[in-house]
Amino acid sequence: MTDRTSIVDLRSDTVTQPTPAMREAMMAAPLGDDVFGTDPTVNALQEKIAALLGFEAALFVPTGTQSNLCAILSHCGRGDEYIVGQQAHCYRWEGGGAAVFGSVQPQPLDHAPDGTLPLAQIEAAIKPDDAHFARTKLLALENTLGGKLLPFDYVQAATDLAQRKGLQRHLDGARLFNAATAQAAQNKHSDIRAEARRIAQCFDSVSVCFSKGLGAPVGSALLGSREFIARAHRIRKMAGGGMRQAGLLAAAASHALDHHVDRLADDHALAQRLAQGLEGIEGLAVEAPQTNIVFVDLRGAAQARSSELLASLNRQGILATGLYRLRFVTHLDVDAAGVDRAVHAIRGFLNA
Ligand SMILES: *Cc1c(COP(=O)(O)O)cnc(C)c1O
Image 1 (tube, rainbow, N blue to C red):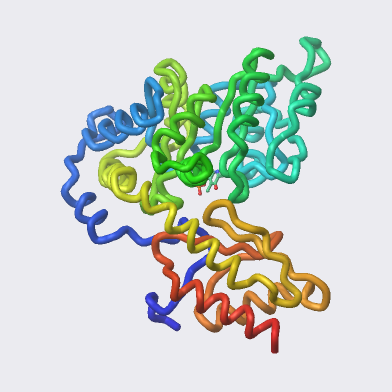
Image 2: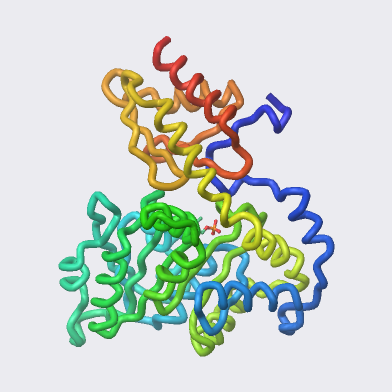
């Protein structure tokens, strides 16, 4: 199983290799020094993504984690707080960076089963202006969250509420284009960019990853007003995220925006294929996927066997993760045959 091509890697959509065309675009990119602001490929990418999502400005950053950190620290100062979901990446999965580096207090809320943060809970969590309390400054949502599309009317209502209460609004849209793909399908059209813009326009700042389903090797963008991005730029520098000939990476991101947005529907179809293949297996509960992530829970006698199952899959060249629940993620380096191999191997394990 050392041959890469025989591996079905369903751990994450971050594992994709740059395609030959993407590598060519990277090699051909004109480069400068982005710390001086003179890398033409970085500048072009920032302009392209800002125009695409309807913002004044954008900042290319190495990771989604740094993008969220720059966003939270640009919206909030020491002693401020942000309202966020218990499962949100920028609360649970970023090492507490906003608190560590910014002295910004998170106010986590439980999610409803559809991934939303109930409006009444958001409202109740906003602190009065009183010396006892941190200053509530920001609402941070994530879309998709755990592969789920937040209902658009919810996104509008929650961001309207935040605005009425004087809060800033940040979207962790690491998988914004997956959300937009699912939303376009719901609305029975295929203009993914229009849906991405509709979602993004509900927020003051948005972070998007190029390194997930879009298939670039590295990079995210943070979007906002010119003034917000100027603050984020300073924080990116403090965080050590000012890169030099970064156009090499921006070229990959730009290629991904041009060529890998309209194919995300294929990943969603493969996730459906995987979920359908696992339907009806004794000991498995499969959550119907809305995008490219399939969560599976082991039940009954199989419940305690998740590490055994992952090890068995691993021996057969099928990689997945199971930190809380078993998770299978489709992306541009998996195909129907790979998904069918995974289904076959899981079925074999549970029927043995
Ligand atoms: C992956 C991810 C990020 C950031 O990831 P990096 O690995 O730091 O690029 C942020 N938010 C969400 C929702 C993600 O899935």
